[in-house]
Length: 136
Image (cartoon, rainbow, N blue to C red; front, side, top):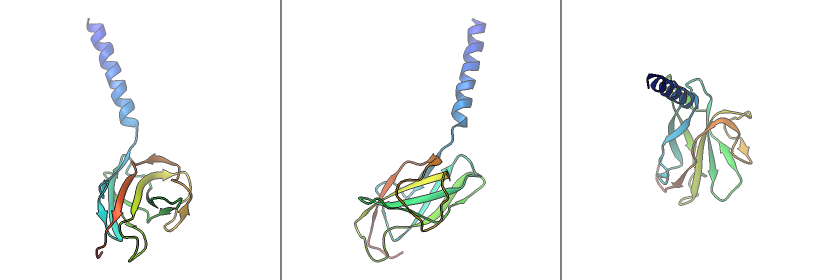
């Protein structure tokens, strides 16, 4: 019985260890479905505080993926940046998808337009926001 308990404990620790080694990146703000202005604060968390985090914005219905400014990442993995949503003074009511990536497999720079989401070590879920008519 003691041996079974010991084996179970080792198995549990291995499972927890394997799970803990998996990285993550997530977007906390804005929330999926939220209305945003021309400039949207995008914030989240990444498991590796040393990661290079980038935000990509895609106007829904297009094959253009716009690279935003590289995010600032804090010591605990919290990150933030500002994303441009659509054209200034236009695109009201239009939907945009946002995804964050960590340590992309291709060189990124602000303003670069991609043909797809970039490959990366970590990718967040894709959220959709709606551009609202309001002052930034």
